[in-house]
Image (cartoon, rainbow over all chains, first blue to last red):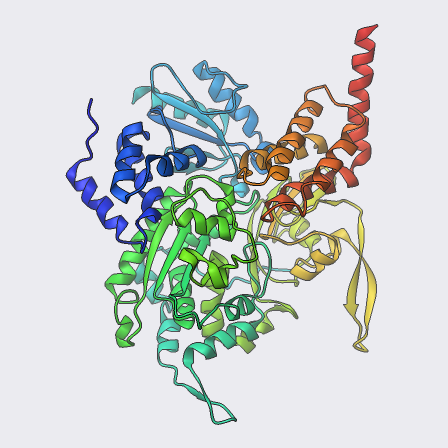
Length: 163
Length: 463
């Protein structure tokens, strides 16, 4: 499969580049847009971004490896980010994550993002999502869910399986 | 009866209040902008004139506003340090990278009243001759980013942004920039590097003070979301009226994020210093107390980086008596007014305004292990003491919470933490060290007992 950025996306990205006096500043925004479109940041995407911004590929690659939100492999369709940090931990986010992992056959002791073999789910333990008053919170794709109970967790899984 | 005083969040939770421009305009939105654009130069006694922009800068200084992001530094002084003679453009960046564990106040503003933030930004840009500004929002707030982009579009359509704003001759553009999940981007020079498209490695100060050598090596102002919203209210109310809110040197209101072991976690906007920590935790208007049958063990008073306070502690604070003389007064933990100076007096800080409450069912070693893991994960890796030390501390605490503790671990942790603080480029070193230093010093018996118990168990298993 060859790497191709659709023309309408490319024109949106060109517009983003104009937001900055120096092109390099646009790299995070371009990577976000490419990840949204392709699902992850491939080597091709790194090289494309570097060409677009007049950079060396390493200048872009070092961002992909530094910023935790960028992925180098495809993720599950349903991406479950469970908050790990203190207020959520006090409200049982560790147990919630174990619940997700055990239902999906994933390793509950592994910290990093894990994707189910069928590609439907990714479960990840992440740092503070800044909604501590509603602990435990889950960022489900783009939606932040407050006070998530095991029953709601099961609902997320049922919906995700049907996707 | 202590109660909330809602200034920033006045409308945010009212039924029917929506984040769109029309609603904001119906509630007096952008009136403060119109007010400053109509200001005339002021005649000074020495015959000179003070520009309208300078007047607003002086007003912000006179209001006593202190930054709501964490450091509590005077916003007016921060602005006054900007190099205005360099001939380079001046940039303003709104720090919306809210990620200090325990903090969820900026989220409320972004999601419920985005135009208030944008108006605060426009006013601050106008006052500082800024023509190009950025709103740096953390990557994990995708909905917030969409809302802000929509609000920026609406503001552009009404010419609150763009060329020749409302016919005033003032041009300003604000662009949204998304982070991608790194806590260190909340540190202002790390944020600037990130906005330049690099890894968020904080810059060394001196020489890289943002006010002189910030974004693209130009003078730059970085202000927190809530701080910028206050600018709007200082303009609307006037600095005198604004400074009547709160307490001397701790003026205005601030939004407190309350989480952990209370019945009613949530956000509460208070006059700074008019409500005590005890009231925030126990009053029915605020946290509503601990769960039934639980007792207070400790509180983390200003985001996870602030030093922990132990239940029953008392502090000696400076208080001005009726005769104007400063005297030392003994204040119990729960009677500490929630403000910048009292918490500093108690050896900690009000930081980002986030209180995390721990009750007596909590294992203090587990709680610290959780935070240590956060700092180990979030260290940017630039400075050796922080990169290695944060990980060592986290590994030691992981051992301690997995049955392999040692009695000597308490001192080991203190030793590492003491060798991080003060030896790093940015304040992240302190942020990682302070929880360890304060938890271990104040709860040393818990740490030693846990380590000793594990050692005894291991010794018994050998025989």
